Figure 1 (cartoon, rainbow, N blue to C red):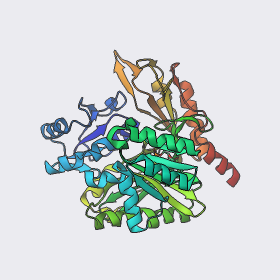
Figure 2 (figure 1 turned 60 degrees about the vertical axis):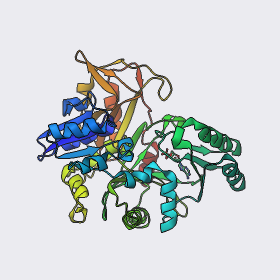
Figure 3 (figure 1 turned 45 degrees about the horizontal axis):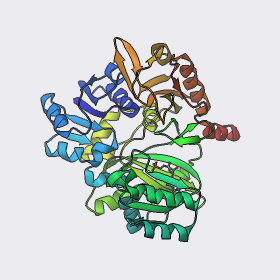
Length: 427
Ligand code: AMP
């Protein structure tokens, strides 16, 4: 088969890496890709939102199946466009991707179908939003309704912060994405990212992961796209996992089908393990980045037949096998990220680092110039390792980080701390 993967981050490198291992693949392409992806796939210089360009390329290169990594083209309807042109694509339609594309849609769906989530209100007017916030008190969470590149959520510890977030968002900071707000109850607990493959009617559980959103050690500093992740999640007992599947994931799949928007693709639930049980705080309509890197590193089965089965609606006959080992990913970013940073600084020793036992280095923002790998973004590398425990995977990943020669990059030094503490407590 000829495949096309859409996207250019670490997630897409992990997808390409996994798909490249499939004996079913004849040719693997990626648009637009990056320097790491270029080593295993043919990169095509087409933007993920250039639907005409993508459809045209699919026809000219006889593409049999398209795998879409990021949310923006999904929410904008790339799957609808490709399927209408007779090109099979993995991912939700625009109508189904509203689970991520509109937080208000997601909340209303949960309310209609009794799916456990934080209490909320939806607002387009500052006065009403502020009244709601004052009546509830802090902490409270203010969210822009639409896609805001991970920046549209303010977890306000004080009333003043929440009120300022309302003015900021309705004032146009996120454009149309912030013209409507969700204000919701603050959920206390441990966060888990839970992933399932969905074929419209059935959900096939993948695995859980945890990420580290803050830029500095100890989960301090501003939010980022994600500074590291690990899987599995020690806090997620099988009873809790079952509760997530039976009370959140499967009811959502049923609800979407019942409402005429059957969901196909990866369903990524952001779940808070609260004292009152697991509660959903967000849905994403694709793999997480860097969670994808740890999930696919743990996956033993061929990924491609599973993605095709999801597209074809036959996941109920499907099973996946996983490595017993844990996986952990340390993100290396350009100094200054998530604020200002420079591009173009050289990175050395990637080859010896990537040859270490059970280590895989996924590229996020890189490009190759005259044979040298240069940083080309904020988050640049996802140094990923497997191990018998999360502590062992962490040790391997940091060993690889030490080998990489990139004076202009940095990473957190404590990825996995919570899980490693829990592993130590279990003995
Ligand atoms: P998001 O950008 O949707 O991933 O949200 C960013 C972060 O906000 C999440 O990772 C959570 O830590 C936090 N968050 C979102 N909703 C809630 C909530 N209702 N209660 C507490 N924290 C939340």
